[in-house]
Length: 279
Image (cartoon, rainbow, N blue to C red; front, side, top):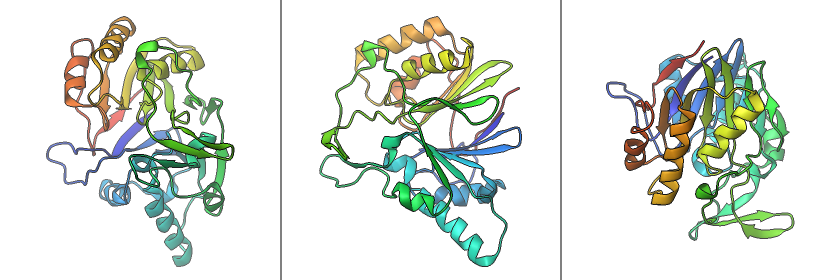
């Protein structure tokens, strides 16, 4: 399995890519090409072009959850596909994977929409759409983890904002937050979006679904910007027991959290342009 960071809050030093508060990771597992999240704007297309990655050949597009910094880049991606069709260029019709709540309207701090502004019906015009709360294997080794069971009290944080459902408006617990896990010879590689459901809960679900307790790496957002001390301590205690071989925290993980995590694990630099291979 190989992955490349297309969108993150920072770029690797010495690389002339664009960055923004968002996340997108390109993955190759065997012959299957997967795009995990799309960032906030259209820079994933610009960065992919500079890296020689053809987004028109992506087979599967996975959304970690419905927030704007992970889904609004879909506009640029769909424009890319539309232009390819109009100009007669080769493309793969992608399949979109997400939790059913990922396309519901969300509001936060007076902003009327902080969720995905594309509907499921609109996505259906551009490819297949598969919504599921259950884990789903995308390849023999790569799995969509589905709705995460929230297992740890120290990761429970008050909900922020509101989500608009067919049954009415409710507090937004970001139930759609999910992740990917890949089985490799070194152990599991876990790829997260924002970890609203709790980074430790995500790891536990990955270990359970994949039947492997070894964690080779975790890359993505850990949702630890200004984390409360009790939450941070619980996570540090958990990782001290799990002992992941490496961590690549990025996006919504603050500097203080990265420094704290480095006390219990091998924290490595992450940014746009990072390329990793496993197995």
